[in-house]
Length: 565
Image (cartoon, rainbow, N blue to C red):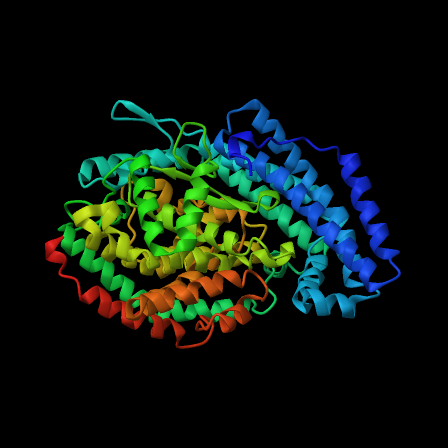
């Protein structure tokens, strides 16, 4: 195993990739026995792992420094080449679906693999390569615009991630000024970002038409590998949230405003939970990593080894820096059987969330590292988020390590953040459905619709001093809307499931941890709804699930004496 600093991106020859993949395709199609086809399939998986590892290294390096000319060129190469490589892989997938020894292959590899491949064939064709390349280019362009922020504030220069720390200040003027500077950035780039998104929407709609879909909605669902639920089921889930959760979150926001003593709270005022400020980590990045090392040494033997392993091999880059892409993610390097964690620490409680959330993703990747079939190592995205969000709650007993006397303050706020996030995630989802059902509307129309939906799920939000957001420009901040259409609802589905782990962990932590590890080891062997069944979790799409999950949380929050915070 190499350290990440020793891992190099080697720009591959597209001609060699084409030759290699065509050779594997020929070998598979000409195999005269199940054993032969099975051996070739194993070679295909290994080749894909190697190809993926190389591409991921380049993607990580671009994320770490978007200003590097070398990194930019490598990312541009990937943006251009991935769709072309997709054509070759699509041909292999078609051969797998039509394999002469498919019954035997299904018996060994599972029928779900072939169902996934069938869906992938519906979502890809060589004729949509130009649109995919355009979308990749536009996604990189969006990331570059966001990363370009250099905002002067209180004698310093900050990017958007770094500025976020000041937006959570207990000082009202600091909170307001930092938030409005961020809003001003999006106002200044409104037309540019709106144009990027408009081109993305039109490219995705064109792809859908080329592939025989009415619009991008069904294509988007199939592209995410959703084989056992659809847009109608998601709409019913949103209805549950509106009816069974939004009334409670409205109550929580009213209590928050009263606690803060603010008569006309603005959107940025809800960034803090208490007048004396949010719970904040009591140390810098090195201190937090040190405390996380102690925490994971006590959670289990598996987490103890794995967290130290991630540190030893430099598989975490945590601090916000100039030129670094915003946000956070976990990705996976198959050749090394190891994940990589990327984030932007900014001195808020979100830094601790990274050490639990992204580590939850990484831990699942580590638990599934020996699954031979790449398609089974990780589930669909909504299930992936269960691993990460559940880890946030499972580590609650150790939060005093990071927050000292503010441990309970953090736990109280964190549960509320989880609950109040769900209506926002549902808002993003409803907006995206409308966008792709109406692909030809203007940027102004999209903003107007966003504000309408936002008022439905988040009626507390006021933008008296931020005209960009009052007219509906908030969604420009949400990178998922640009790069990962229909993904955002996954966070809310996962949150409902993660709360189930939390409710169970408060009854019996050891039992809940064992259940969690078993769930991680399942990887992606089953589609979402079936995976929940195997993991013994209640299905969010079933009426009554949201109410069943939320009621114990109401009692938990009521048990706190907030006057002590």
